[in-house]
Structures are given as structure tokens and as C-alpha cells.
Length: 129
Image (cartoon, rainbow, N blue to C red; front, side, top):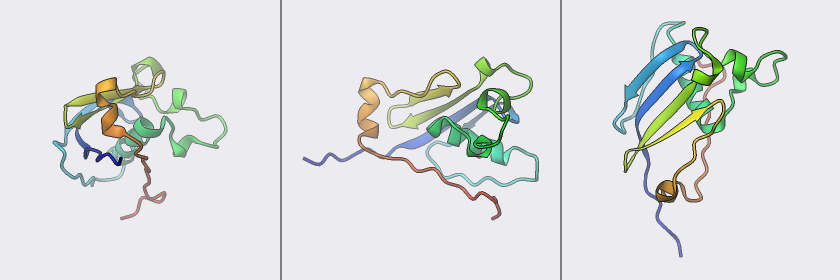
């Protein structure tokens, strides 16, 4: 029997103590998002927050000797234990959060949202648009 998975939408993202972002919450209400801004305004940090949420890593830090999530993903004004990225998803207004210590775990009543789905996160390494 093939089950029909529900379509998930991101209603809100809350980023705390992550890279250049001390604290930011954005209500998307399931709509598309275009990120545009001058150099140094946090565009890459915002995208990196999604990568960290879904994968628990940052490709920008991998393979570079001496760089680590604990030391280099945390905003300079905070401790590693403060870092968190949370997404509120619909339907159901389900909030999942990743920190350095724990990954997001869907509860029993939200596991059906995810089913056997796989996620692939990619963005341009040179970030030119």
C-alpha cells in the first residue's frame, strides 16, 4: 500500500546564537523566500542555519584543520549551549529544534509527516546569482 505523504511547509524559522545571527525569527507562513542583501548582512549565515538544522554540519567548516561547529558556528556573544535553530512546520504547527547537543526528533504524532522521504540540501558554493 502506498501512502500519500503530506506536504510540509516551513511556517517559521528561529535562529539563535548562530554564526553572525544573535537572534532572529522569520515568519514564512509556508511561502517562498528570496534572500538578497549587501555583503556581510547574514545571507550565508541564514542559509547555513538551514544546513545545520537538516544535517547537523556545515560544509564550510568540514576538512579545514582547526575549525569546528562548537567554536565557529556559535555567535561570538554566546556560549555553544545557546546555539539553536528551530523550524515550525505545517500542517499542525509542529516545532522541531536542533542544538549542538541534540538533533530534531519528530514526535510519534508527527512521524507521518516525514515517512520515507529524503532531503537534499544544496546551494551554490560560490553563491553567485
